[in-house]
Length: 468
Image 1 (cartoon, rainbow, N blue to C red):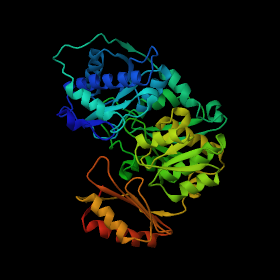
Image 2: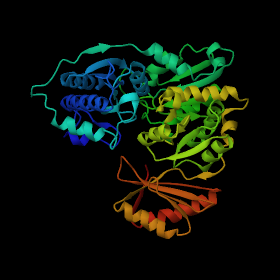
Image 3: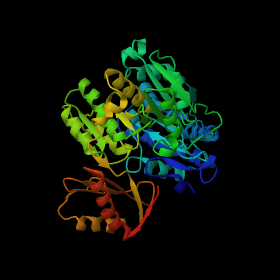
Image 4: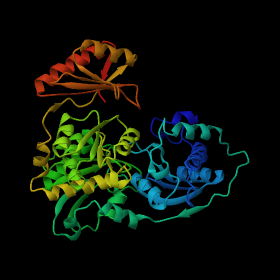
């Protein structure tokens, strides 16, 4: 049963089956073994290298899974620092702030209410996914047996880190917002998730932010709408409220508040790649000549605007494990994904919804234009949006596409990217679903429609299109 809960980047499954309290205990013991052994192998001998930071989200079953996880960690012999009900990025902060060997958040992010899971980080909050340690956590968890004698002796300590976390995030806020000399009207949709706890504690007393709250109640573990800001239908309430309140912008967080999507003053959704392009300008003013990392599905305007701002654009594979590694390898100041994850050098190269929000409002008050006018500069091309295809023979489908466009430049960083000059596309296998995902960009609507139909025709010969 335990093998069913491990995914590409984390543990994610329905509760109470297959994700049970026993499985959570096994995962706690397995994670403790991996994290402490990784720290020892890295030559780390600091006092906190047998301590693991653990938090949880607001789901009704998170406390029982959290308790079982902590018991597994302690039964292995590692120590738990319980930071309580927190957003996932606070785990990344706490691991670094306290100097621990790793951290675990109990959460299912944007999944429905009957799901739960765990996200793992190791030393310096570096990600743990398949290929970077999660397979070892799984291996150790499988052999962990709560009925057999165990080392035991692990302690548990509760810590409240909201004040230092708040101070850390405020470093990314414009001083004018902090002292009230500049103001913005913002509508925030917490999606009945952890932003409902985080936003009041971190931004609630910022004089320059006039916040209208939507769906901040996270006490019941239920959602007014699915806590996934990438689904346009989930943004309707926010979009309408932004327009009705004549707000400067809107923000929608996902369930564990590590991702966010921005709405302009007209209620229009801003693509996360275009937001990356715009935010990179301010980041590069603070760190001239630095690299900016973006996922390879992003508009060409991202690389163009980074270059124009004097930075070095760096493409990455999709996924936080690859983005964080690219941030580290290139000493990048900033990075952004289409999924709504934004990464910051001064946040340990980790992603943060709270810091992304701080960066957006700070960049906006630096300018004299509205949100929509700022983003217009990045809207240089037409994008198809992501199209999905169920295809059994994924490798055959991608080979077929390469053969169909022999004059296109081929890149194989993640799936295949075909660039014909005036238009380009990327086709890659999903890490979480049995799908091929297509993203295409061109100079105008007609070209995009024509080329999407052409590419889809080749994929449809080997499978069929799906709506999600």
